[in-house]
Image (cartoon, rainbow, N blue to C red):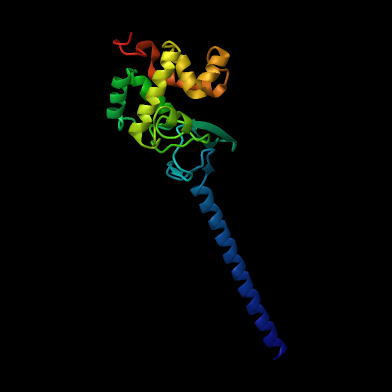
Length: 225
C-alpha cells in the first residue's frame, strides 16, 4: 500500500471518529435535557414531579402533607413554595361517617376534619411510623378498638371514631386536648397537662380546629349529657 493510500485511509478513520464524537455529544445533550424536564424534583414523600404538574406516586399512597415545589426566580435563584394537596375523595365516605357520627354521638365535621388531616381521605395511606388507613390508626390502637383490617374504610372509620369518642370523654369534651391526644397519645397530654409542646402536634391541632370550625360547631350532639 502506497503512502497516498495510507494517508487516505487515515483520513477516512479520522472522519468516522469525528462523526461518532458528534453523535455521542448530541445524544448526551438530548438525554440530559429530557431528564431535567421530565423529573424536576423528588419530594420527601417520594413523589416525582412531572411536566404536566401532576405527581407520580412511587412509594405507596400520596401524603396529605403539602408538597414542596422548586421554582426559579428571575435572578436564577431557587425558591421553595408550598403546594397544598386537595382531598378529592372527601365525599366518598359520607355514609360511613354519618353512621359513625350517629352511633357514637360525635360531630360529623370533627370526624371529617380528622380524616382530612390524617390521610386526605386516602384509605390506603401509611405513615412512616406505621399508622394506617383513613384515620391513620396505629396497629395497637386498631386492635384496642376492635379493628381487624385498618385498610377497610368502614372498620377504620368506626375504630377511629370510637377512639376519638374515648378521648373526648376522657378530656371532658375539650376538643383541642382530644385532638392533641389523637396525634400524640393521651399519655403525652396527661404528662404536659395540656397540648404537648411538639411542633407537629400543635400544628396538627390548629389545622384540625380550622377545618372543624370549632367556634360554630358542637363537639357532641345535643343529645349528649
